Image 1 (tube, rainbow over the protein chains, first blue to last red):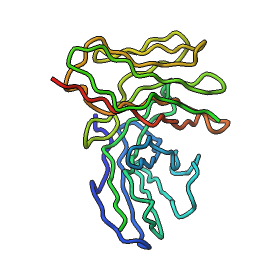
Image 2 (cartoon, each protein chain N blue to C red):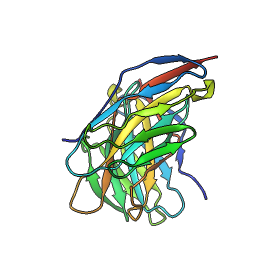
Image 3 (tube, one colour):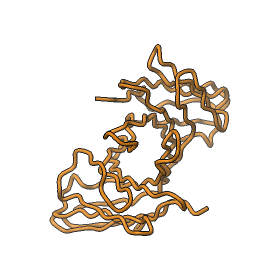
Image 4 (cartoon, one colour):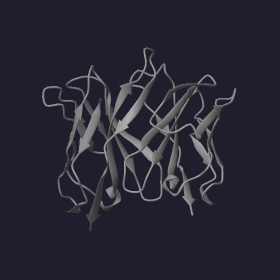
Length: 114
Length: 116
């Protein structure tokens, strides 16, 4: 069974630029959630994708957008980067059929905005 | 809205000491509760879970009991090891629409350092 993978591992961008982060979900999982984890904080929910559609969103502005593909992999896009976007971005996959609705996390992408 | 509160860290213990990390929650309905662990430089790993009142989750010597009467899910381990040094997050599964779609709501995390 393949776990959740994310790319790239680390990324440095300049304020105002755009970035795309990628996630491959765990085998058999059709739902992907994205979280932002600032240094010393717990993760904050950005949005969730199920069957290629966004089906829930946290308190993040529209410049945070995403996609899910037919193989359930996903992208997180952030436009007009701001310094406060510097964080660890975590992708988690899950299956709605799972009783307690566990989420399995990838290792994250560390984004630094300068 | 729903929320999770964890005891603040850092927590520093000697090897073989007893560990308790407190977690309380505020929620409507009956959420599932989780403890995740984040080792240095790594992503989040599910440590244990409980889905209903009085359930006890356990894994790798860690335990937590879902206490509805006190809205708590405290993490315990009888004898910690140096390899347990990590950040521990308490989380609850929150339904956010009419379907079965859920997101996780997290505490701020508690850093644990175990000294030999």
